[in-house]
Image 1 (spheres, rainbow, N blue to C red):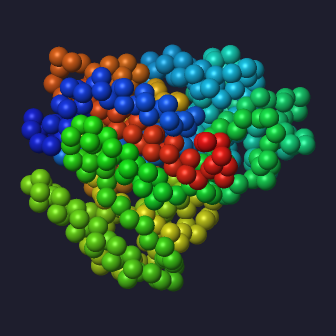
Image 2 (cartoon, one colour):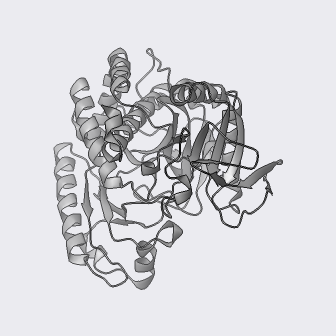
Image 3 (spheres, rainbow, N blue to C red):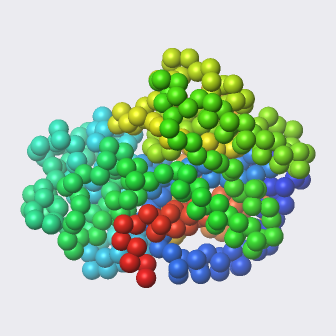
Length: 430
């Protein structure tokens, strides 16, 4: 399915897409050189928003949980990319331990785990699933909604290695974002490759740190194309010391909202954009669309009702929110199946391997779509995201998808730099 592309045949984003198409060889060489200096995460997904006047990442996930939403057409490319990643980290690996999230009742997530395990097995690895869930004390089989079963086993620590009964893996792949903290079970492992590293989890990672790294990447890339970096970069700021339940830090938060809105209005005037600026306020750590609100005026963060305060105060695993990121709200112009849509791009190593649209029929162009009621529409990114049509218009599907892939890879590069900056063992980078 091709999305309903609404971009007018003029404006800053269309010109940006033209420059991307014209500079494709330079862009690919630029990425190739960047990956010589920076190691990409094992995998990642990037949520994008296409406003017609800008195309920007709004979230980068280093433990992607939607492989089941990708089209079957992307599987050969995903297997090839996984092979490249495994060869980089553990070239002689024979076995891999996959550690999923603990929520075993989410059947959609379990489909993701099954798809991911299938991709990894096709690389020649013996893959088994080990669970951090304390309720998994014995081999447990879970039914999948589309047929088949998923077998989970309790993790075992033996000395400085982790595995399963009768299974001592060479490599460990986390599909658990560690929102609840870093398990001692996974620390100080010996001669086992852990992917992604522990400091990629939300117990350490912060969105403000990621977007600070992305800000630098976007500026350098913008110089390559001679464009305004704002066209691919959302303004943001951080705010600490917030207690939504006790209404502490409201004035500070409102001041940040006003400052960000002022910056956005200035850009809207510069580009003659007739839209209402808004700001997304969300927890600085965490995922699943929890702890997110959209505001258009500073007064809105001062007048939260009890339900809104409760929603913002706690995120996944019941963690209290005290630090937030304020991010320029990026409208979306795209619709799929009569619902508002935003693209999500999936990568393994440095390769774009697929993507889908997150669609929400009851949300607006300026609202968070990662919410109950959303559904997903897979798209054949495997070919079109990597093969622009030199003879086509900038906003035809293959070229629009190629632009998505370029911006998503910029976010992945920012994630690699972010992980370097937060690595507890910086000596490994020389």
